[in-house]
Amino acid sequence: MSLERTADLWWKNAIIYCLDVETFYDSDGDGIGDFAGLTRCVDYLAGIGVNCIWLMPFYPSPNRDDGYDLTDHYAIDERLGTFGDFTEFMRTARDRGIRVIADLVVNHTSSDHPWFQSSRSDRNSRYRDYYVWRDEIPEDGPEGVVFPGEQEGVWTWDDAAGQYYHHRFMHHQPDLNVANAEVRDEIRKVIGFWLAQGLSGFRVDAVPFFLETEGIAEEMEIAPHDYFRNLCEFLTRRTGEAIMLGEVNVAPDQLAPFFGDEDGDELQMLFNFPGMQGLYLGLARKDAQPFVAALLSLPQAPPECQWASFVRNHDELTLDKLSDDERQEVFDAFGPEEDMQIYGRGLRRRLPPMLAGDSDRIRLVYSLMFAMPGTPTIFYGEEIGMGENLAVEGRRSVRTPMQWTDEPSAGFSTADPDQLRRPLPEGAYGPANVNVRAQRNDRDSLLTWFERVIRQRRQTPEIGWGEWKIVDTDARGLVVIRYDWQDRTLVTVHNLAAEAAKADLDVSDVEWTVARDLLGDTAIEPTGDGRLVIEVAGHGFHWLRLNKPGQRLTP
Ligand code: GLC
Image (cartoon, rainbow, N blue to C red):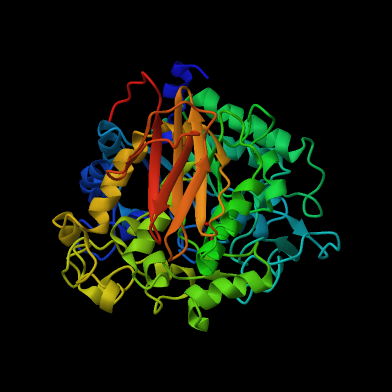
């Protein structure tokens, strides 16, 4: 891989930060975050080293699914500001070297969308076939609701239309009919529109459902993945640097087609859902094996593609790919109460409360997130160790306002706490105890630690670019990942167990003089036979760069 390409594929070594405008910073005191507020926070994000912001949906919406139910793909929710405010934000982000991507929600719309309203009320409407209508519920169609307990089925009768419509998600989120060429044109236009506003790509919502046609729609004249490939080509034709980061939570052996062919001509990035789920099982067991097994179950990402690493996102922490017993182990360890669980498959908590605030363990997990193969993706507030508010319904428990200060409204807004978009948590994870201002002035805070690790991650392109492999060890708790990139070799070691462990690693195929810890002051010389031996504290971690004879690396 040439150096020029390295420079171009920016996402391989990016730090992505996901936020929702309405819960980030409120500039006008109405209790709802807005673009003008977000613009004021861009320097904060630049300061911690973020170079890509992922905006959750900011489009007009009745907000029955927090914006993932939109009524206009070409506009901004007026509660969040004007288009002018959006453009100011985009300009400020770009000026500080931050790219912006946004959610692309094209599997469905809100049932309030004018397309759906027209579609249901008139069989001759040009929008009729924008959605999927059937006289009878087809027998060969997909089953399985996405939100068990909240959603009854995937077909709902509509009196006005006199037919059933298809919806993979809630009944108020009718699925768009991707078999209709006009819908496909419309989606292209949506992408083109936002690229023209300066976006560098999209986080694509619910990709497998979007491409699912079997038993739902009429024959599609183009195979879904061929269509998707065309769409991805269109994206980079319009904007060369643009990417699509896909939400694809399917079994590991079904992931590869979403990258496209072996050169990677579909999604540039996929979230590493298997790694995330394996990590929690490993943490619960204090055993590296489930996480290592999950990494090894991943298909090889094509050279110009990448995994996106995360430990927590805006949804429930889904454990759907674990067995029932395994899931129960994670529930027992991290969310034993029923109120902490959701849909029978996930947890509605953030990481620090799950780990009972154990700061060593919290850092271990985030170090591993930054060190695992892929591009790290931070969910806002993770950098200060925010907790959830279980009093907030459903998955939204983790989407409370950003905690900037110790004031009652967390410096998020000048409105009263009970006027905020969502109520803040109280107690140990409330703003009095967890906030940016206090942590910024504390050298030992999680925020200070995050800043340092992000800085180091950006200077460690081996992780984003290198070839990785698992190095065997006898110690049960240790995850050891080795990266080779150009003339560099990096070995990352993480101990999921509470007991200290000795890593005795065979790296004798490389000639090296000293291994330096990029996150600490450890420096280790090879044993006589070229092995790397290191004592790792319980929950300890090291990123060890092997210096080779004559090699000159920037510190
Ligand atoms: C994705 C989003 C989730 C949303 C769903 C329907 O899974 O992450 O928040 O509810 O799609 O759009």
